[in-house]
Length: 170
Ligand SMILES: [Zn+2]
Ligand SMILES: [Zn+2]
Image (cartoon, rainbow, N blue to C red):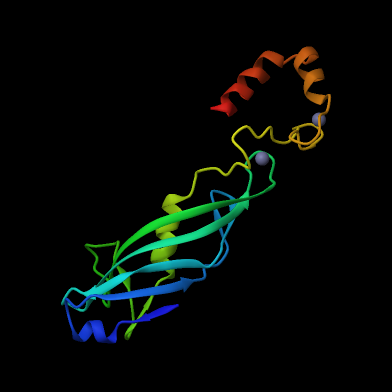
């Protein structure tokens, strides 16, 4: 999805509202696969006068990933604010600039960057997800098993194990 900014470039200071639907490729975030539904973007842009375009917008979508504990699918609504400056020439003193060519402004990079900032560090299907049994792999939200009980009461590292488990809770 590219915005035509030819009019804005000819009329610096004039504000142009826009809406857009932006598709993002599936990506990996901290080793979790994340897929975004088409992102609804609504905002405005204007030319700041030196062939640069300032763009502000709200982005809204749903992110699909997997629960960090039980690996079941999880979907999370995500909203982000985009505040981006686009230039035709890269500026070594401003690494946050987005570049554009001709009169077409591509929104993907700015939209993706803004959404990634709003994602949780880890996805959980629910706050108290019990995760998978590390021994037999059953989903402890749905099933119970006796692996853990056996280890905790008879294993030589039971004390160590409970410390590790407590750490994971934090
Ligand atoms: Zn879970
Ligand atoms: Zn088990």
